[in-house]
Image (cartoon, rainbow, N blue to C red):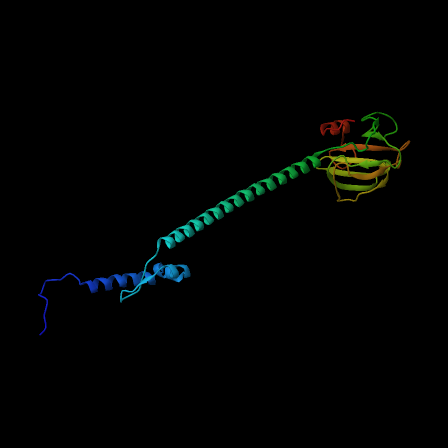
Length: 251
């Protein structure tokens, strides 16, 4: 004879059903890795006795194991924080090194700019023996179109500033000559040379040796004839002493 529950009435689940439901919940946790992670550890397996309920095994975690888990979590957190701090420090160091390299590059560019804008005398440790616009029959124009620097034959002649060589070779009364277009757009000319050491199109820098002085052309003795011009040609001369002085060279 079967007993039926009255329609519409529900009884509280029995102890067996409740235990089964709890075991099923624990099994679900095991499948998600919560209890499974604990059970996978040999230490946990050794220290976590399994209760035999007759249903799904249930793992009980002791206080010692819980402390180990907390300690491990704290150690992992500390390691992560240390790694983050090291990465931040490395980033700061990299930025500082980048800024230092940029500053060094700017300083190098500025030093190069200053060097290229520097002017020097065409003959070191010399003096002007004949001034600009001095009159006389020695010059076809009736006056001196440049200045003469005292220099024995074979004395080093230097480019007064940075520029590009536009002319070399024989220049008639100037003898062997060099004409350079300067970085500021002006031209400088070096005459009566005994030897020429540059070629047309060559870049020159301040103080670079370009020739040796001599006594070629229309001269009464060895010296360097120096002119400042607005064009590369004869007749466009300006006061070379004023030109050099404008760029910080006083002769």
